[in-house]
Amino acid sequence: MAEMQTSLPIYQKSIDWTTFFDIYPVPDVFEQTVYQWPRETLHKFQNQRFMQLVETGWRNKFYSRRWRAAGVKPEDVRSIDDIAKLPSYTSDDVKTDQAEHPLSAISMVAGANCSRPRL
Image (cartoon, rainbow, N blue to C red):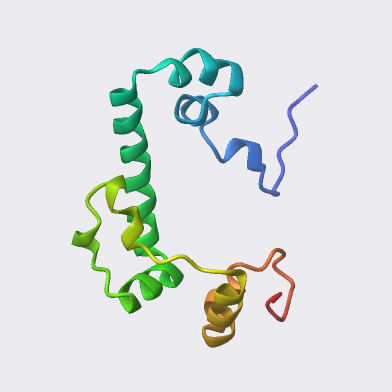
């Protein structure tokens, strides 16, 4: 039987699963690896992940606006030890931000046919 071609996206093919599971091991692998690491190795790993998240946060309008409003600059966060410099937020903060910046909110809506953002 010939393989049929589809014009629809096949989302399971949109990610490199081998790399994904190398970065985020399944529980039994995590228990046998990361869970067993010495404290210093674990701290380096946590710091690396934290800094990747912070980098992503600066590219996100919601976080970058909040952090700048709190007086935080990108160079202020150099390690996980600086986590207290980042302001916390509530779901009400997210709703307010979406109301004030509706184009950002639209990108968060599940479903392409929605005409109004879900708040």
